[in-house]
Length: 440
Ligand code: XUL
Ligand code: CO
Image (cartoon, rainbow, N blue to C red):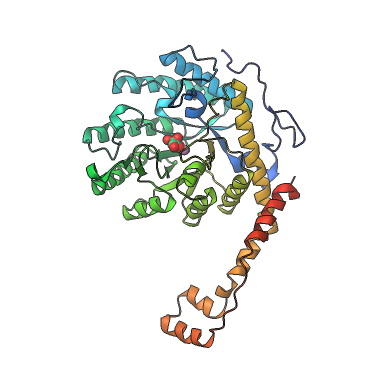
C-alpha cells in the first residue's frame, strides 16, 4: 500500500517542555482526568472534507496543497484518499472521522452512478476501519455544492430538488448506518434565502421541517440508533440561514415537534458569526438538553466569514471543555476538527502540525476546565450570586408559590436594596491564573 505521509512517524506525547512540532505537548490519550481517559473526554474526529479533499483553492486562486494523490482522478483519487485518511488518523491517534457523501466518492454522470461509486468506497472504508479500529463519528450529505442546489435543497422552490436531496440523505444515512456512525448531521447548506422578494419563507420553513421529519422516520425504519444533529449557522452561503443559532433552531424544532429527535452540533466559528461566543452557544444547548456534538475550529475576529481555522485559542477551548464537563461529557458526539490549514500552509506536515496544535489546545483546555470545576471557584461564586433565590421570597418565586400582589407588598417593605458586585474582572483573572499554571 502506498504511504502518503512516509516521512512522518507516529505522533507521540512528549510533554509541555518539548519543542518538537510533531509531538503532543498536552494530549496524552491514556491520561486519566476526572475519572476518564483524555481521549474519552475529547473524542477527536478528522473532517474528511477539509483534510482530504480540501486543496487550498480560494475565490482568488488555484489549489496549493502538496499531496501525494494530486495527480489522480475519479475513483482512483477517492481510493487513494481513503488510504491517506487512515494513515493520517493512525499516525495522529485520532479514533473518529466525519464525512459528507461527496467527500469520499465522485458525483458520476447520474444519480445511479453516484450511488454505485459510494458503495465501492464505503466497502473500502469498512475494511480500513476493521484494520485500524477507527470509527465513524458522523456522516452527512453534501446537498449544497452542485448547481441543482443553488436555491437550496429541502427549501428549494423546486420539488424535484427536494426529492433529489431526499435521495441523497437516504443514501448517506444508509452509509452512515453501515459504517456504524454514532451520529448523523444536518448542516443547513443553502437552506436560507438571499431576498424576500422571491421567497416564500413560510413554505420553505414548513418544507425544511417536513424533510427533517422524513429523515427521522427513515432513520428509525432502517434501525439507525445514532443521534441526529442539526448544526446552526447564521449566514454563508446564504445571506440568512434558517438554522441561525442554538435558540433559533430550538424554537424551530419545538414548533414542528421535532425537539425530541434532534440535538445540536455546535461549531465555534458559526457561533462567532452569529455574534455569540462559542461558550454561549454551548451553554444554551447544554441547559436545554440539546448539546450533541462539537465542530472544533475558530474564526478570525477581523473577518466576517467562516474561516474554519484550527483552534489555538486556549481561553475558548477551556470554556468549551468547561461546558462539556458540565454536560457530563459529549458522547456519542465528539470534537470534530471542522478546520482547514491556511492556503499558505501547503506542506503535508502542516496538516499534522495543525491537528497536533488543535488537539493540544483542547487537551490543555480540558485540564484547566477540570481543575476549575474541581476547585469550584466559578461555581461557588455563581451559586452565591443567586443565593437570594434559595430562601424567603426568592424561594417562593422559584417554587411558583407567589404572585404579583404578594411581591408588590414585599417590595414596599424592602425597598432599600443592597446589590453585590458581579466581579467580572476578578473572575477573568481566576480563569487566567488557572490557564497560566494551576494545572500542569
Ligand atoms: C459549513 C460546515 C459544514 C458542516 C458539515 O460551514 O460547518 O462543514 O460541518 O456539512
Ligand atoms: Co461544521
